[in-house]
Image 1 (spheres, one colour):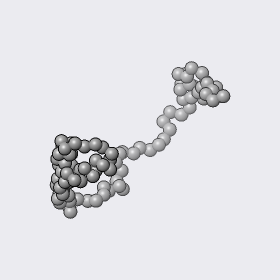
Image 2 (cartoon, helix red, strand yellow; image 1 turned 180 degrees about the vertical axis):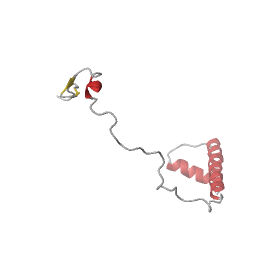
Image 3 (cartoon, helix red, strand yellow; image 1 turned 120 degrees about the vertical axis):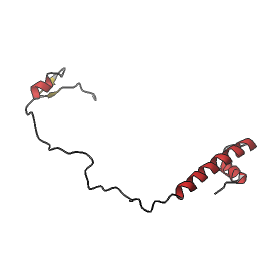
Amino acid sequence: MSITPLEIKKIGKLSRIALNDDDITYYQGQLNGIFNWISALQSVDVSNVDLTVDQTTPQMHERQDVVTAPNRVSEVLSNAPTSAHEMFSVPKVVE
């Protein structure tokens, strides 16, 4: 596909961009390059490529969710500036 200077002028008008002759030549080359790249991509043979990845196999190793060290509340709260009722105590934000 090749784009003409007339089409560049029309795109500029629709975009409300003032284009001089140098701009039209520049953008025509840029857009033709993009369209050539797209046509090169379309010519690639992908008939032997699977359309989707197998989503049934896990991607990461999963481990059991088990408690390894229960009741560490006092250790965790020892780092808190203030605590109340075995929870972090934070200042009121909304009045």
